[in-house]
Image (cartoon, rainbow, N blue to C red; front, side):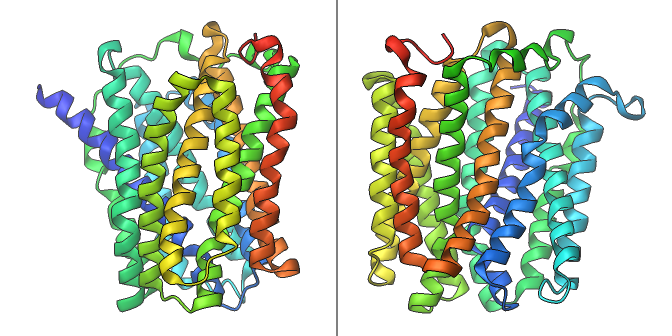
Length: 395
């Protein structure tokens, strides 16, 4: 393998590994960090909602990258560097702000941090498209997805242990350091001229006048709302009910991450065998059962088992939705249509974080899990429209 190819592979792997580390922090410890400042779950959920806004607007960040060769340095690399630097600076500033005393300032910092992440995430995907030959596409996707999964699995326990043993400042410095790892490699990757056909197609929005595609978008928003809302409150629930420490919270998230990987692999294999409609039914029932099971946790030992089951449901549902979305797009404008579907799913995540936090403060953790579990039944109302007459969505 050539040196150039190794550099590309290493850069994509490191960027997504660092992103996985950030995901593990927000999944496992951010609510616990904020609870340390006596914030209620509704306020914590609101911060999560604000932080997700840049991911809803990722389409427009991609359009900016497509259109503007920044400083004459390229359409991808300068944006990736800016995004990484923004994330590093924000991470180093986090310990300096008391969210209990300066909510608006902290929420604004979270928004800027996630804008940086959304920017480098979008442009890294674009650079992968621009630099990857067709024969390497599967390998690159595996490196990127695998890198992020390893980032979640490996760093969740490390971050939890670091927060427990050393303190929060060490966590944010470590996350900033991880973010910087890929920076030198970004400068070494050569960026080719970006093909014009990979620009965002505004005609993609017109495709969403079809009821099947509108409903498919609603399914994505629904699954994201449910799974991410439940994930946000899992560790706070375990701390309130059983007094888990930060190290244990990290271990729980590692187990959850392993479940996500298994669910993703299973989801892809099973969808090919039982079909997309049946896969949505199975994913919905599995999500319902797994999240309802979280409401029945009776101790920390059971928490590990149910976190693994929940992770499996999370990964399976996500994989099924991605598969249906890719299969439902017009090949001429597939990338643009897929970007819109992902943006709608991110809206669901933003709503789910705020909703779950508010429900916890109103009806408690266990009942909130049951409400979120029950919302899975709404998927059955969407299926007849998505798969009308047995056709694929969007047909």
